[in-house]
Image (cartoon, rainbow, N blue to C red):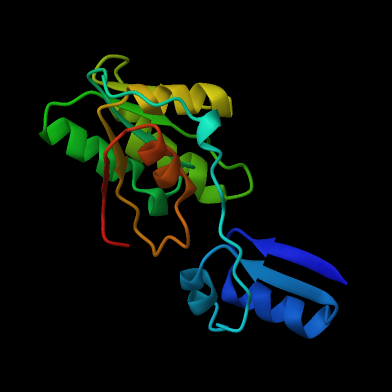
Length: 170
């Protein structure tokens, strides 16, 4: 038997696994994810956060942060609009996803034109330790996603770092 942790998976792929790999047993990271898969019988094991690994700060710098892959669903372009309208600085951390053909086009059209190195800054990748340190320095974490997030690990990490999270109710 094999255990698969579904951090994210499409319904069709879950059905494929069930049909073709009967000795493969899934575990979801949230009840919401099992519901999205239309199979609420899937056991849930929630992600955990070791609070000792996340630096906490109650003295933020003057910037907002968003972290996510360069895909429309993560709301990077929305975060840029939110920051721009509010005359706030924004740091974007996220990579172009090579296996999603629309990722690079999204970045080039919706994100890159707004990166000025001052108000809107961009870092492709940060080591986890550096990312959580950066989170702890942000005055807010933007999470304007456009899909029903099954867990939102970065939200949990931002809150653990002492950073308020501004998110859509998804």
